[in-house]
Length: 256
Image 1 (cartoon, one colour):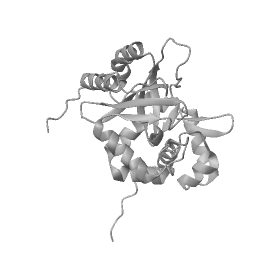
Image 2: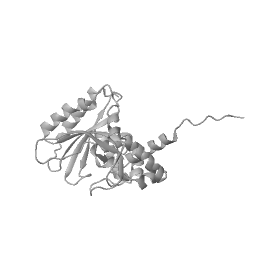
Image 3: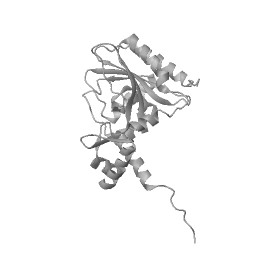
Image 4: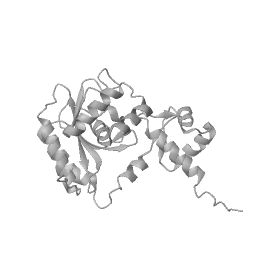
């Protein structure tokens, strides 16, 4: 008679993790019925777990009864590289770019199928793009997000498209798998990506990636500006700043 070892997994933790994964796929707060359906959980079960996550600040609930990832997750993600503070390394370069180009500079990180605006610096001018720290945007409508998808390859792009259905936010959004794949791979190959009013009409961005000592992309650096003020020559400034930040984080470009 063979003995079977009991499962070492803890069901409630598995379910909580599943709900966090589901929430991370959405760029906007999500209703309970959507989360419970996506997670395959009964609404009462999902509701109970979500409110425990809220008590621990891993999830936040809006006044409309919709759920989103909480600030504690963002704080924990900030500690991934405990030996080096990404914000502290990036900030001088961000401020230098802002002062030279006169536009908003953003530091972003990826969480699931969205990028999170981790830090920003804004110019001292009346008209500028305002990004909210902690806000989220789908990968396919941001320059940094498209670069991250492109670096992951065609299979990852296809998986993202299947999960999200590529909602269109403007007439310029890449909302077909074929066009998104081409855009992401092209952007990754040249080392920068543009957002040409794909998330918001009137706003254009330039994005580059930041790499760590394991030569993996861990964050993104981007410039957001009114589309009529954005200049192609700023691409080199972003690339050089991204390279300098990466080098301080221990990145060494392979010679192959």
